[in-house]
Length: 240
Image (cartoon, rainbow, N blue to C red; front, side, top):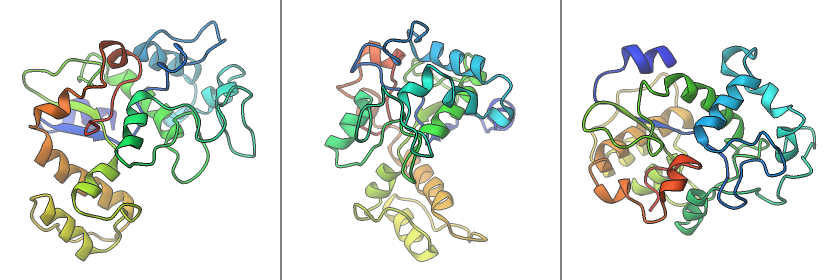
């Protein structure tokens, strides 16, 4: 995927990645309170994950998850919960609090258990972001470029709700529902897929939604996005 993003992707592409590019910071003034090596910003976090996971194959992040200090902050499989993991859903980024206010149902990126978690993919995603850093802009850590391609964090349920799917039933696994959603997003019917799973349909609906809303200036300047958050926690595109 790194090679495709940097060398094969069509020009002027808006890339939506369904990962958390960072971890909670604002609530406690640190990613990992009490750890002296806790990074100061998101880019330093990406570097730390990469350093600890350098020998993990395929951009995996198992070494970071099992690190004696980092693991204190995670909820992991096998009933393992770090002593510094916040009970319940876990610590949330400011953008995830805003997601809740929009009626969404985010989980902490420090939670690595359950079907709804995105914590593991977020950590592996940070290794990807480390590789494209400085070569492909990632919003809001980078300013909006005047032209060219750009990467943003997305939450696929935002696209599904914008397509008119009911809350709690945003996963699509049949062609007719997918086409109805695409029509609502101003796109043409899809080319038939070999199989219908929610990963594929999420990607298609999110692409249609990005194409429709990317020119809305309000989405690039949400009121809650401060300069500090833009360098520490980041923001989910589409969250107001």
